[in-house]
Image (cartoon, rainbow, N blue to C red; front, side):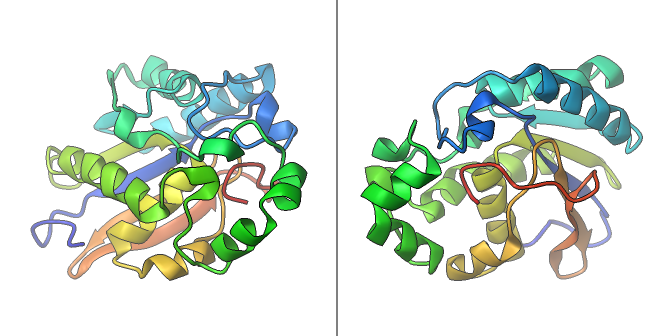
Length: 217
C-alpha cells in the first residue's frame, strides 16, 4: 500500500510488547490478556528510553495488558497520550490459545505445518493472518495520515500482528510474510516512507540477538 503523498517522509515504528510468563513457557497467548513479568516491565522501560530519542509524534497500542503496559513506559517519558485500539490485538487462535508449542505440534501438527508453509490456516479455528492484517493495517494507516511531514508513529502491538501488518503495508504476498521472521520481546521494526510506498528500514531492532519467544515463532 502507498504510504501517502510523496515527500512526506514519515516513519512507523512497530514495537512488540515486553516479556510475559507465557512467552517463557512457550504458551500461545493470542488474545488472552496476559500481564508483563517484572523483566518485561524492565525491557519496556529500557526500550522506551531509546525510542523516545526518535521524538515520536503519536503512540497507538493494542488494548491487551501486555501491550498497554509497554506503551505506558514510552508515554511516561514523552508525555504523549496513548490511543488504544482492539484492532491491534494479537491473532485470535481459538483452541491453540493457552497451549504450549509442544502441545500444538502434537495435537495440531498438520495445521501447524500448513501454517508454516504459508498456507491460509485458521489456527485453532481462529483468524487467518490476512484477516489480522485486514483489521490492524487500517488502524495504522489512519493514524499515519494524521502525522506531520517527517512525523513518527509508534505502534505497540504483538509479534504476529506486527508481522502481518508489515507484510500488508509493504504490499507483500501473504504467503511470504513468514520470511520476515519474528520479533523478540520489546524489539521493533521501522518502516520509512519512500517515493513508491513504505520500505522496511529496520527489523527486530533494539538489542543484541535474543530468542524469539512468541505466538509467531
